Image (tube, rainbow, N blue to C red; front, top):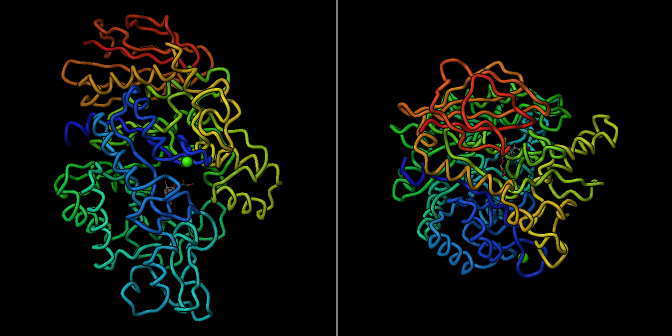
Length: 556
Ligand code: ISL
Ligand code: CA
């Protein structure tokens, strides 16, 4: 992988919640332009924009209705061109989020496809005849609830949608469809876009969606990914995409790969048969799943989180590292303590994540320690998944208050509330009422406040990013877990020849004793970073860690 990719620190922007400049309550491209110096100052060097294409926004833009147009709520193509130019001036790469597993039902391709069985676009989507009793072709459920099949009268057939009804799945078996996608990709790359985050890419090949599949997570339908993840032709398609598109440009490609094992993941990044640069895996996001899958009222165990992360560190030559994004609750609320130890735990979690081997991803707001939101009622939620889940839980017989509590804890809206820039009206996000409610804690947690404080979470991120981009051991060093059985501490080394970086993070809210294993008691090691200013400067045999204390030692 190229040097710039290896040094990449990805900052994910959720445009509608980043910064509004024209007073309509929705973040926009000009807002991103305005805040580029903020991102530069943080140290991130790759920006990933979640989808900004033309879209009816039933899934906040992951339902694209025109691949080559910018959604006017975000601005114009001129604004976008300007954004690319300014990013490049600042040596920031710009990565677009591209959804090629499905489109919006409003896309021209689908509008045509549903008309008849023999027009140019008929095969662009996945159509099947009903069973003899008229019911859906299989028991497959959609990721957002309900059946994955929807009947269309005009064709007398069902179409497949792994996500919402208004997100029909594209048919990758069609050569013409694939060519249309490649042309579209080149359109953006020719503009100077530096790569793509390819949404739900593990799901594009679907030989098995026509059979009944097992039902999981107490649902009414078969799990959507059984019939669709890592299907037989997947790697053939990705190799073709690489040949036809990516190999012709200097770009970074990140595949979002739900329901993929480490062994399956290796294929995506196999240099002998090039496909993508890295994958975005989910296994560690499942450590607090329970009876109702993600929407279960459980707290994770450190051993589960650590086992999963370590498994991936050991299986792949390179990985993406993250604890939160626009599909997940806020990381400090979920894995740390968003109350008494918010600052300490946010820093420790950043440290543990960013110094693993691979490309770190920061989701907007995590660098100032934004927390889950305190919504009081269902109608404050915006995410389609939150509504579908609430309805499903209530139908299952759960008490309404409990159902709401569960949705609150895990809703994707937790991370989608507006960026908190200052303590003025609407947190400095917009002069108008924002499209989604702002977190009440913006008077204390905001960028202005942060930039005034030398010890802020933000400044800790800056220091981490310096380490991660400048120290060779942080980039290329091997990853080795230590003290695999410790119930409160996650610790590992990164080793490159005789250089050793030791990373120790406590997940406990109490004081804990941590013994440094014999083989890594390197006497030259000095502390290079900590979230407590009086942590030990030198590596001793035993360290007493305070709540959420995190320390990095380095012998260089
Ligand atoms: O968030 C999830 C579960 O609640 C995941 O299953 C998620 O839906 C899956 O990882 C795919 O996510 C991506 O595609 C979705 C979109 O809604 C997400 O925002 C996006 O990240 C459909 O396009
Ligand atoms: Ca706006």
